[in-house]
Length: 125
Image 1 (cartoon, rainbow, N blue to C red):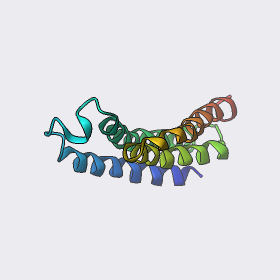
Image 2: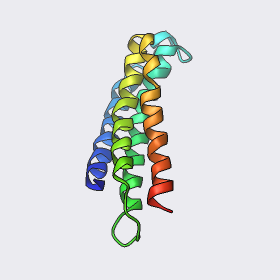
Image 3: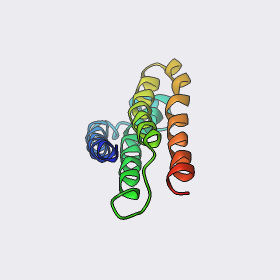
Image 4: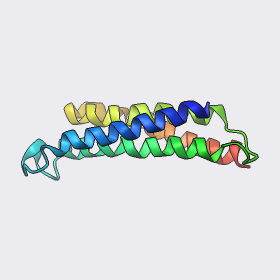
């Protein structure tokens, strides 16, 4: 399982760098996507950074349970981290496109919180 999280982590970090480069092409325009404080622009920024953040979470998970730590990675945490990583930027970009998609935010949030709790309660205790 942890091998999937390493792969996903590095793919997501790369996606975050690429998405940051793409949206960075438009940041000079103060009115782009409704201005700096606009909903759409905030969601695009959150989508970009969520690639990086959830990628790092997946790497942290994998290296927490690397050989020699004495702990076994909980498989549910591996899958919940993957679900959270995939759905967080997706929901952010969809919500930037149509704000009704914001109602899906509980999916990545609950997935990532569940993963963290699973690591703490099942993997490290």
